[in-house]
Length: 274
Image: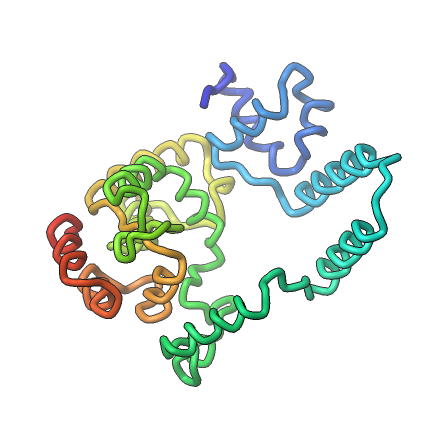
């Protein structure tokens, strides 16, 4: 992704104003010579995010554009009914379940047979999942951790290549890459080495601080092995059991004993070591 030759002062100004304007507004008010893609790419490189208010305005602009595009189109009665049901579901939070009944029943039976989410095994019965009571709470800095994940794509690519783009345990399609050492600990170690406090998001740091954070995070991240490709359900089951902060590689080995055969366990022991 190219940085379109922005001067340092332009970059610093962009950091200040980007979160508060839609891309259309930025082009109209400040950057008539830039395209939306150039603004998007620049924001991506800097880890910038829109404020909630700017994001809402952006969605409104998109809705207006979509409405204009559909003006004059004739929809069948059945199509109108589907659109109405979809809009009603979004407003009420009761979207129509797209699964066939037999599919839903199979999923429910599989979950029940695993013994997951029953009684006191349900994580929600142990710890509430909101705010400070959430096991992943860290002074409201969740956004920062997601921003920093954008810097570790090379690690993710190497992990996917190592596991042949398949779940390491099942050999099926994977959805997520598991850290054998908690990513939050890696981030915390990074900020401790820099003697920086952890703030809500990257926008709360100067451009120079952000560059130092990126470099230090990559150095810290390379101390640990590549990740393990997993299906979303297996990954979720692990964290439901061991949490998101204080697990280690041995926890993962114990966990996969109920999922994997000896060959897979041996491979993970030999090639993924903390």
